[in-house]
Image (cartoon, rainbow, N blue to C red):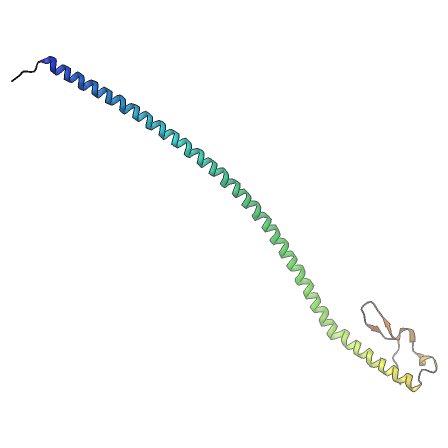
Length: 155
């Protein structure tokens, strides 16, 4: 058997040490490369997130603006609805007024007008309308109804 001397062992240890040093240097370079890659990825990701955040903030502002516009339009629509409800209510009241007051008055005028025609046919108007104010008997007014004269007549 051969005996190993201290020189051979030292050479092996030196080679192993050198190999270990090379390996450590490679690992350090690898680690630095990975750190750089990680840093670049983080920067890219941060930039991408910042852009998305700005875009989202812009969209949020647009949405807020649209919401304010819609709220304003909603308020205007509510006001318009209330105005129309008021007008409809007044129209219904005026229809009711027409049905309850104006229509019966109109019928009364028609009846008196028929009576006047009868009187004329009987010759009752020979003496200046028998005290009637003939100018006011059948005169249209702004409401579209007939105004009777100041006095009623009888035949």
